[in-house]
Length: 322
Ligand SMILES: NC(=O)c1ccc[n+]([C@@H]2O[C@H](COP(=O)([O-])OP(=O)(O)OC[C@H]3O[C@@H](n4cnc5c(N)ncnc54)[C@H](OP(=O)(O)O)[C@@H]3O)[C@@H](O)[C@H]2O)c1
Image (cartoon, rainbow, N blue to C red; front, side, top):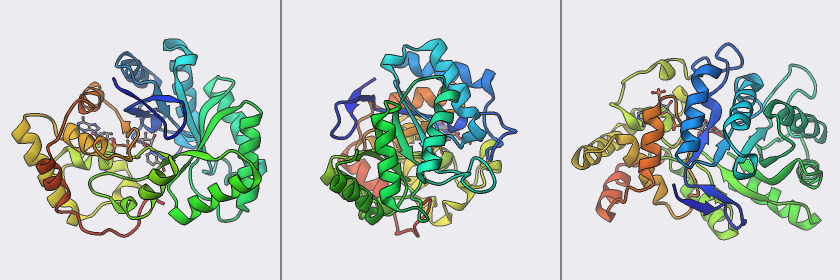
């Protein structure tokens, strides 16, 4: 495994981050395709054995059970000091007032619930899952700063939003001397490259690490267009993200993977790893083979011609995933 600094911080992260949305009780929350604890643990262990030190979950994944499963597995299999553990806040955890969002109350409540479920005193990276348009950004940034100062998070990060929103949040923190975001977790893969317009140049300019989510377009880049799996049949959010116009990109991945004799997932992930702005794609692994391909992709070098062939079919997309 290779390790890089997360943006301009001193934090070492593996070039592959394990996405833990896959792990959680299927009958809790919105993702009925997830793996329960027994099925999840061997994959978390495999990731650690492969040198992956970076794990991403969220309070909202499977109604908190992702954090519980991941936290327990990491306590059992890893040395906490060596692990970079990331979680998120913003999603709705309870019906009614103050059940979600980024108010001071929500953040202070949710960090404590996340730490309890994860079974740890601190998270390494505390990320806002989305922008909260109903809370003043000053309130959110000060609360996040206080979470860091209380020792409950080492760094803070953000996830999908417009570049101007991210910029405003950073500027607000800087003006007040509060902690700034060190990372952007955004929707970025061969089928969705709108982030190249504004967000990625902003992150490069500001030294912000980039952690693409759904780097394999939720599996679409790994198989024939139209092929279905257990997950794809039940992935309501994922079914809204891509369209038939993306088919020719999947065909280009298939062609190059065929020529090289490697699985398509390796080519699609290698393309992301070749983007200078990308720190670590956050991969979803439901099978041992998924992890093997993610790790192998780190060592796969694509030629300029292959990269051009993968990028050529792209056409502008409507914003999705915010
Ligand atoms: N911040 C956000 O808003 C946000 C949003 C989404 C995700 N995330 C994060 O990003 C992580 C990854 O998301 P994701 O699971 O959608 O990512 P992904 O890597 O694009 O998709 C994972 C799916 O791709 C397929 N796959 C993976 N490796 C494969 C291989 N080697 N060969 C064949 N198929 C393969 C599997 O699909 P099948 O199971 O169908 O076979 C797997 O479930 C999440 O766990 C979460 O941490 C964050």
